[in-house]
Each structure stands twice: as structure tokens, then as C-alpha cells.
Image 1 (cartoon, each protein chain N blue to C red):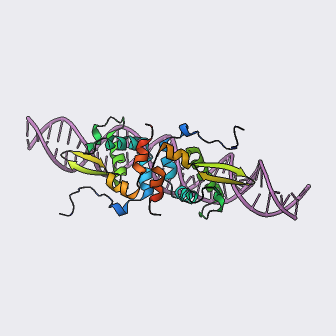
Image 2: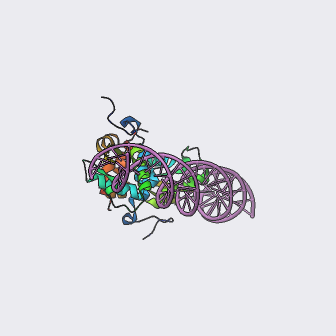
Image 3: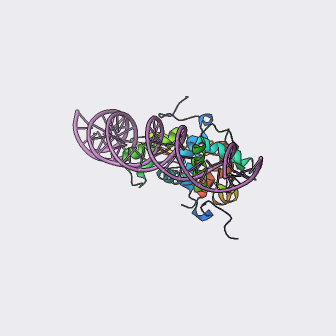
Length: 104
Length: 104
DNA sequence: ACCGTACTACGAGAATCATCAAAGTTCGAT
DNA sequence: ATCGAACTTTGATGATTCTCGTAGTACGGT
């Protein structure tokens, strides 16, 4: 069993700091990341009340996924997203904690 | 003596995480921040060999200043920039270290 | 087989951004 | 007072991005 993922994700060594920072710099995506930080087991982002359209949400989740910030895996008709905490902490120790420490 | 600064800077409590992340997300600005991290006493960004025009550099330094990432003060005809390490570490502990830990 | 839910793909519009050149400002030095 | 160096301002351009609606796909349940 090599690939249980249906969607492309960057390997840890392919993650670029500029892409991560850009992904985190958007208010909507930051809210998603904050929410995911509270749910280590992952959750469907569609359940979050973000006040944006479904297609916009798709765009943001893809941005986060392609940057290497979140891991996304299909579950039925939903897609479960989770923070790539281990990878991010290994690459940029303290970054995620610092971002999450910011006042809401 | 209230204001020794000639340029407007956000107070610590006015710094917003989205602005900081956006400021750090640009490759040129990230290079500037990395350089400033090596020079605690500050330096004129014009001395860095960034391969951009002077007006573009002005734009980037202003973005960093207005986000609260750097402190800029005039010195003769130059402007000395320095990282606002204390403020950033207080607001987002670990963020700066994490960013600087990233492979260049 | 059909329907509803969850999500994606596509195309478009508005806004933001990075970049530059040209012209202007400020300051120190001659 | 003049000059040059360092920087800013303005205006423009092209690229990127955020947003949406519409149409489409995939999956589970009835």
C-alpha cells in the first residue's frame, strides 16, 4: 500500500516556505487552519460556516493542500482535511504555533 | 520625547497576523527579512543586492514596515531597517524562528 | 434507477500586487 | 549653491488572486 491518497500532495521536502506563508496569509484560509488545529482527526471544511461559496472553498482548500499545509482525503462524498502538523513543525519549528498564538 | 520615528509604524497591538504573513510571503521580502535577521543593528536595504529597481525596493520595505515586520529610521540620506524581533516574538512566539529555519 | 449531497471544473469579473521608468525630494559633501 | 547619492512618489502595465455562478462528477441512500 503505497498511495492511499487520491489527491496530489507535496512531499515534505517539496514544501516551500513562500507557498506556506502565502497560503496562511489569506483570512479565510487562516480561519480554516485555526479550525483544523482544533480537530486533529480532520474534518470536512464544508461543515465550517465560512460565509463563502462552495467553489471558493474548493479554491482555498486546494491552495492549502498544494502548499503542503493540509492533507485532504476523500471520505464518501466529502473530503476530510487535516493539518500537516508534523511536516510543518519539522520544516519550520514554531511557525504554526506562532501563527495559532495570534489573537483570533 | 514621544516620537523619534519619522515614518509611521504600527504599534505592537496594531500588528495583524494576516499582514505579517502576507509581508513574509513574497520572495524578495523574505530575502530582506533573512538578511536583517543577520544584522541586529539594522542596515540600509539599498545595500542588498536584490536585483530589483529602487522603486520596487521602496515598495517592499514599506510593505514590511506597515505590516510591523521591520522598523525603519532615517540616517542621512539612507534609511536603516531592522527586524522587529521583540514585537514579533511576543505576538507570535516561534513564527520568526520557524520562517528563518526554512532552507533558503 | 433515481435523487440529494458534497464537491470540482470552468469561465469571468473585480481587486490586488509586483514591477518598472520618470520625475521629484532630501540630505551630506564640496 | 551646487552636486550626487539614496530614496520616494506617481502612473502604468502585466500577472496573480479572490470571488462567484453555472455546469458537471462522484458517491451513498432510497
